[in-house]
Length: 416
Image (cartoon, rainbow, N blue to C red; front, side):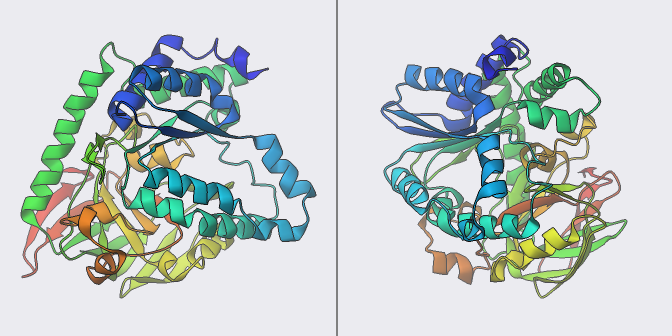
């Protein structure tokens, strides 16, 4: 079925609300500001709605780039091996230049999470490495929060069939669309107001944590006894945040988390994943790792272990943490009971940690810190940033002060 026919399956009113929320809440796009969009080809209906709302908000120029699953598979099946050591460096350099010129960034997620599951893992690893290196100039602008940016999702049919394999494609798309709309708070008449109220709740959580200024967090539960030291002069973030260009935006829609930067050298203990990690076409299950001095020294998984270890060997920072996030077990995404195979959603179902690059905005005066100053405070640097879930209804979290005293933060996965 063609992409255009699929628009009849996805509620056009809620799709338009999602586009409006992306522009007004996700980006808070400013009059005269350019916008760069990346999206799967199937997400064209949402791209068009976002483009319209962007121009209504006064956008200067909206430019869209599309990824096509069939073209991606053609490369893996027919390109010479040396192709996988190359990436479109010119494109990512252009994106970095755009962000340096205050262009806003919007990514539409929705790729088939298992697209590359049957392809040569060596090719996948080489292509990921090449793309990560080429993308670094643009990633630094995003991770450094130089500009307002946002991610939303569209129910790509191939993704929908992964989430709902027992349904017909049309039924799967419709059901995934409903799940996206509910999680993104656009299944109500006034989603813009709902988002402002939700942001206020998240702001209370982060202000409470910032006021306590813990030295570390202690996660305890089945398969987990982990102390995550927090970076010096760290700050908790969550919900709406202000980018270096002065624009307050919501980078992730949906979002249920408050998060900060761990100290790259102060993570110790063991931890087990509580949900599978879908990464580049591989489902990695039952991850179990052990940290010493901030570094993963032992890693296992019941499925996808080879791919996980390739990720850990990406660079020196890939075995260290760049983020720790707290999410209540009762979050709407967790309550849905769905595994989305999409980090944007699955990370908002449970507390999580992220391997790799930290966010400079998670520091006091982070917008003014150089890369060297971020590193001196314990911030990690890497080509990757990969979240995986460690929270559940059986996990407790304590905040630990520098003198060793503790404060309950979460009990059985809920805010204490």
